[in-house]
Amino acid sequence: MNPAGRLSLALVVGLALSSPTIRACVRGDAEVLDAATRYLVAFLLSWVSIAAVGRLFETYASAPVREIGAVKETPRRRADDEPSTASVP
Image 1 (cartoon, rainbow, N blue to C red):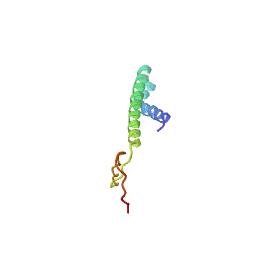
Image 2: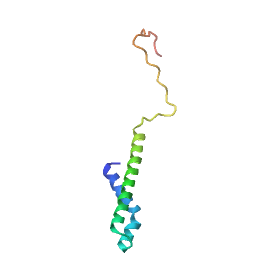
Image 3: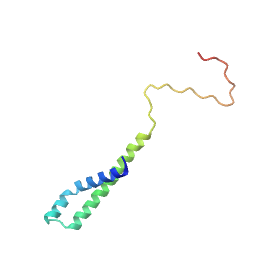
Image 4: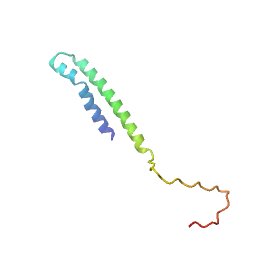
């Protein structure tokens, strides 16, 4: 996911988490500073969480894929070994 998508998702999740306080602020039951602080905390926590999950997925996606039942590679020859004259069928 691109950084702008992560930021947008964090903004929406932060808004969803702090929506009860924002609704209380609109009704007049909560202070604006309290609502803003709670939104900022919710946004920061969601941003850090989304970034961590994104980093985890990117790390696993960049790992080499190993096939089940794949044939093992034969050991490579050393440079000082004599060349083999046996023919391979």
